[in-house]
Amino acid sequence: MKCGIIVFPGSNCDQDAFYVMNNLYGVETVFLWHKDSDLKNCDLIILPGGFSYGDYLRTGAIARFSPVMEQVIEFAKGGGYVMGICNGFQVLCEAHLLPGVLLRNDNQKFICKNIHVKSQTPDSFVTSEIPLDKVLTIPIAHAEGRYYCDDDTLKQLQLNNQVLFRYCDENGKMTTDSNPNGSLDNIAGICNEGRNVFGMMPHPERASDPALGNSDGKYLFNSILSLVEKV
Image (cartoon, rainbow, N blue to C red; front, side, top):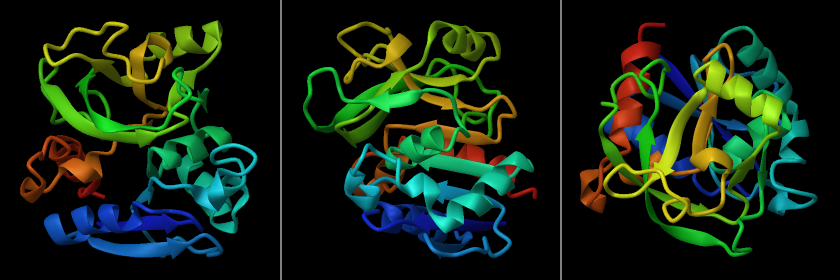
């Protein structure tokens, strides 16, 4: 298996993602510059968090047109595995690889703290190793993380089992108070219909090393490795 980390001008979680995949899991990992036109035969592409192109226009709007994204879109449409974290999730939505949009947090503030999420299904390459009753503690760091889509899209997401994570409290209850940014239906992460493209606002790469005092993010990376490493 080989993993590629996309680096846009303004990415700031690329090194974190590289550390998890390369140092903690021993996966061959390379950086892919936003001007690259070659994905270097990677089996998994990660779009990391950050502020690509300074978040000008709106988050992910300019990054979506980077040369490397043409290759990412083609790769994803061919069934390749793609994961977007925070800003990466925003870019995937702008590229229409995932439905919906990420809007300004309902409190109009940047939020940086640990929150709780629960997996909604084991049927995805990032949730296959997560018990459905397990409450994960994962940090968030965003100003535009409020997931939104129209009613028809939400019905399709629910019907197709595409909602992979929802915000909850420490006991696993999904309430308004446990929703940190006002996301529709407490949605924290979704996948596409083909289940090979995934995006989430929380940062599992920041909760994967026991040295940080929290390794709940490893549940996601264990899931990824259990499936993608077979490629």
